Image (tube, rainbow, N blue to C red):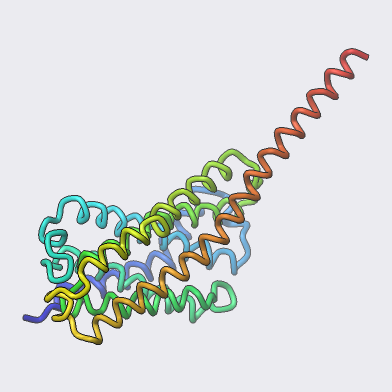
Length: 268
């Protein structure tokens, strides 16, 4: 049976086309109508804005589908290594199309959005997801990793606020920053021991040995490398969150000081 079938290939190609269209046409059209600030951005920021809009759209689509699969797809959850991968493959086909589209945009607009970590992240993900699409293996684990996309909209929103000139101490920025840190931690960091506990539970089983050395290596190498990148990003996000919390304290102290000054003036 051919796992990487015409349906999955068609979805991947369609996904690539849709995300390219979204970047080149739909994002600018929609953004200019939602906020006048978009038209005031320079060309480099408009490029990054559009890539992040596309990224948010992708994250919402696949993230919600991942939660559905985790909660309701018994075939995937019953056999974590060889369970029926059909629903996960549909989601991965969308992601494959997005990753290739985003890689192309990164290469074409390197001066504006080039980032070595994103290139490594995308290549590792493509390498790992290929096995799920081509051989129908490890669907549960692939779906588990895709849950990380639920934190992406908050990361992108932080950049949107910054591009539009929102104060870092603004209520919207502070709330989003806290939610971003929490979601990133829940979606990418706290799940690490849960994920590897599931990996260990499969180690040494007949299902595990049936994978073969190449698939086993791809599974372990891609997982470890992606988690190292996520941990590095978590450090940066935590530092940023700490700075935001410090800003809250500074704003409160400033407001308190101004209040005292006003009272003194009234008394005088």
